[in-house]
Image 1 (cartoon, helix red, strand yellow):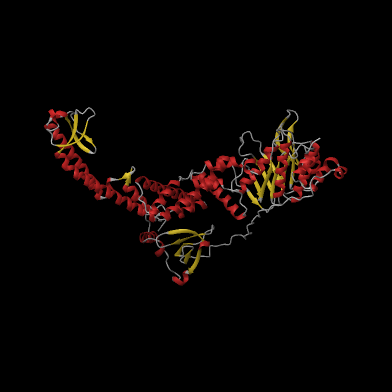
Image 2 (cartoon, helix red, strand yellow; image 1 turned 120 degrees about the vertical axis):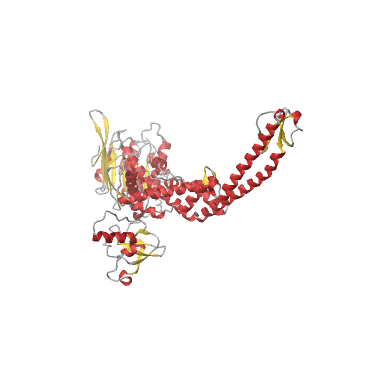
Amino acid sequence: MNIDKQIEFDKIKEQWKNLAVTDKAKESIEETTCYLSEGELRKQLRDTTNSKMLLEKLGTPPLQNVAEAKEILAVAEKGDCLTPYQLERVEKVLVAVQRLKDYLNRGKIYNNPLAYYEENLDAAETLREEIRRQIRSGAVDDYASKELRQIRSDLARCEEQMKQKAEQVMRANKECMADSYCTTRNGRICVPVKKEYKFKISGSVVDKSATGNTFFIEPVGVAKYYEELQLLRINEENEVYRILYTLTAMVAEAVPVINENIRMMEKLDFIFSKGKLSMDMDAMEPAINTKRRIVLTDARHPLMDRNENVPLQFEIGKQARGIIITGPNTGGKTVAIKTVMLCCVMAQCGLHVTCTAADICMNSGYLCDIGDGQDITANLSTFSAHIKNVLEVLGAVNQDSLVIMDEMGSGTDPAEGMGIAVAILEELRKSECLFLVTTHYPAVKEYAERTQDVVNARMTFDRETLKPTYQMVIGEAGESCAFYIADRLGMPNEMLKTAIRAAYGDAAVDNYRFGRENTVIQKQSAHKISKMKQTSPRKDLSAKYRLGDSVMIYPDKKIGIVCEPVNEKGVLRVQLRDKKIWINHKRVKLHVAAEKLYPADYDFSIIFETVENRKLRHDMERKYTAKVIHHDENS
């Protein structure tokens, strides 16, 4: 059963994919399914919220599709020479990386966790500047090297000398010329000579006109420059290839760094696409629980016009595990159950939901049977498909499932259809899953009234205007072949007995002849929810590392000195050999305590501040000065 299509989550995915930039992010969106790990799901929802906050503060991030760059990097790794076009594509990716770093750096002022992905990006400035300097407009620039500049200057001089020599010959022999200007034929500069004077001009015949009246002759004086021109062109080609191979080698050396940049851009593209979708749908982050409780406030179907959609108030799991919705046709029952499941699926895929408030439980599986109960052409085949789908649902259901069914028992005789509906409901109730069904049968309403953990709900109807109001009120109830078909399709005898008893009474059960031996529904192996371990409140980490402590950073095992202690977010600042970085305390281990390295009154500004800033601070302590201390982020 294609759940995504039945509840229209496939349409949500299409909208979502259109908001992604990279092919990898689009592929990840297509493959997205519900997360069964509570910890992973909460992380995905935090990412969605954080990306939405950055989008609201800073606008759209400067991401670009990097599929072509991956192919170019593969060529460089093999040792093949990259073309100027390919080198420009690499340079554009590095420019995009730098812009993304700048974008994320601006986000750090909001203490947004996503902004610290900036430290995982390396713009490879040296490579970027070398490509920019030597490649321009799809070709190797004249100023890429001194040698190339000299060769191309000599080429231009040689071509000019050839042209001047040809023009000199034309001026000296005007009466012999068929035209007043020289031309190029087969890569050689020629003069157009009339047929009758072809022997008067010393040189080689290169071509002639279509009529044969004009001969194109390369004068002897021009020919002597041609060999020099060809040699210069060979030198130019060799120098161009030398430059291209040098740049290719630099790209090949930087492939691991660029690939990591690309991987990070694709990851951020996926995360930001969720934030964009949330903004487009005016959605919010739901609360997640594992207590089998769903509460939706002002829920609306994300694909419907929000100006026409009537908000839905819904709750299940606290007082009842099953809700049976009744009401008039076109009253919004189907839209209501689709809205509930769609919000739950979106939440468990790490997306925001279209509610003003939501508390949604994790489900191990989503099962549904949604058909068109209003189709006047409904016949035996429709009912057969319905029963097959129901049996598939019952075979997969467990206590952690969410099930929705539309128009239960439809497509057949009302009495027998009602019995089938009651039997299905009883199986769902026994499974202890959460279920939401719609029906028209009065007996099903009575079943809900007398059965524990099952309640009625109705879609309201305006008696004066005779129009539905699309509001749900929970707690209020607003000769056929059905048994034979259900029997033939494998419905267990116990279920059939329950159905017959509900439709015709106890006496009818004894008189019914079952066509099959008693069977049971084959239960499928179900996924299990991985609950996140309950963690105690965060301890005060401010005293964990002190100023001057020597620490080791994992997984790189680099040694650094603590220059700012752990803050309330669990992040500290460490001075490395060439820069300062912010890093989570979990990635740091104490190497040597500060008291073992420095005297008790040691002035750490000697390590962490420049000489100029220390002198300026000393002046400030003694007298007034208009100068300002500037802190370099990497110093």
